Amino acid sequence: MQLRTTAALTAALISTLVILLPGATVEAHNITTILAKFPEFSTFNHYLTVTHLAGEINNRQTITVCAVNNAGMSDLLRKHLSVSAMKNVLSLHVLLDYFGAKKLHQITDGTALAATMFQATGTATGSSGFVNITDLKGGKVGFGSVESGTTDATFVRSLQEIAYNISVIQISSVLPSAEAEAPAPEPAAVNITELMSAHGCKNFADALRGSDAMSSYNDDIDGGLTVFCPIDDAFKGFVPKFKNLTVAGKQSLLEYHAVPVYQSMSMLKSSNGLMNTLATDGGKKYDFTVQNDGQDVTIKTGIVTAKIVGTLIDQQPLVIFTVDKVLLPKELFKGAVSPAPAPAPEADAPTAGAPKSAKKKKQHKSSPVTPAPASSESPADSPDDAVADAEADSNNGVEIKGFRFAAMGLSLSFLFIFLVM
Ligand SMILES: *[C@@H]1O[C@H](CO)[C@@H](O)[C@H](O)[C@H]1NC(C)=O
Ligand SMILES: *[C@@H]1O[C@H](CO)[C@@H](O)[C@H](O)[C@H]1NC(C)=O
Ligand SMILES: *[C@@H]1O[C@H](CO)[C@@H](O)[C@H](O)[C@H]1NC(C)=O
Ligand SMILES: *[C@@H]1O[C@H](CO)[C@@H](O)[C@H](O)[C@H]1NC(C)=O
Ligand SMILES: *[C@@H]1O[C@H](CO)[C@@H](O)[C@H](O)[C@H]1NC(C)=O
Image 1: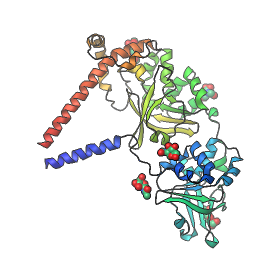
Image 2: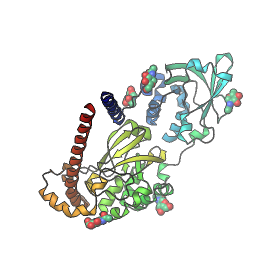
Image 3: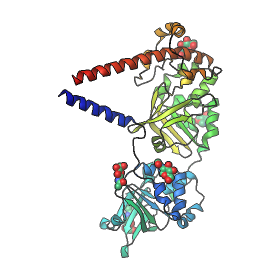
Image 4: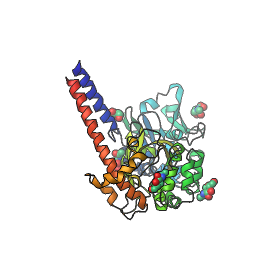
């Protein structure tokens, strides 16, 4: 009986660990590798990489890629589309269902509508993200975008089939779609703060508008920018603390919420790890860790763990996500009081509070704990008071954290001993 309980608990622990492990999602296929075997598809393959569609294809199961050879792609290249328009066009060639050669030739009633990745992006209106597959006379199979209403291309051959994960087929030409090819508004033309304000991030936008950080954001947009913007519920209560920061501290805090590269959701999911921010500058780390948590993507600053809760815009090279907490960099808040507004009960929150601050300085002096190395790196850092405070606080935090871990370990061992007996 007890043994069974222990076994069950162990199993639960192990499965929890497996779920928590970053990158635990194993990719079953790699479209880049598959297409690399066919040099006549190098252009199509190249643009799957450039538009980051390759990653999205690899993250999906039950998918069909309708590839077009280099000759067919040259017609498309002549249109000199922007990267985001190119992404839309190519995503119309990725069907969200498995169509092997056999299935294509046995379509019930001779015609089938397939949803595409273009439909899934939400950019497509009405049924323009669907492809019409038709069995034609003489065993031919036709493909056309529903938008065009015509049969634009035909099935040529199967390149690779991994039933029922991915089918890569060749079609005779690019599927035309005025909507997919339409130029997206230039990212520089997007008013970031206006967009944020209109979608539940007004407080953050207000802080950003007119700040020096805003110009850093603007300077980086064209080369790629990923913004993590805290929702109003999170930023509102943080405002007093924000106002308390020095001018340079405010700038670092705001710049800490953006990364100078384009990172779509699927890219974040498949590239867990440490990430530099706009605030990173030589000795100033200002980095955080991106980590999957089940279907969610979290950002761990070392002070808080925030979760991505929405996407305001994803238009290469710009993407803006919303997060449920203000990202507090260690450089400014190490061990410090976590902001009152944090909606979820963050582990560190209870250690915070005014009553303790009186003891802080004393503990600092007599504390046996070595100060964390992070705080030593930039004594000349902008928010002098904040850093000094942070150092004092960090010892406090470390001590309490260490105690907490010890306590947790102890109670876990008791639990095991109890269960085994
Ligand atoms: C299909 O994908 C699943 C899940 O990733 C994987 O377990 C399976 O081995 C794949 N099938 C083949 C034939 O590769
Ligand atoms: C897929 O393969 C390409 C080259 O063959 C490689 O650069 C890329 O990292 C691979 N992607 C994944 C997710 O393994
Ligand atoms: C799909 O194509 C077939 C054949 O051209 C046509 O009869 C049918 O109406 C089309 N369906 C849609 C939804 O466009
Ligand atoms: C964005 O919009 C706000 C208010 O609507 C305005 O104050 C600001 O100047 C705009 N920014 C840019 C770069 O156009
Ligand atoms: C602002 O800073 C002062 C002095 O460092 C501190 O006493 C006060 O509690 C801070 N206020 C907030 C809201 O953090």
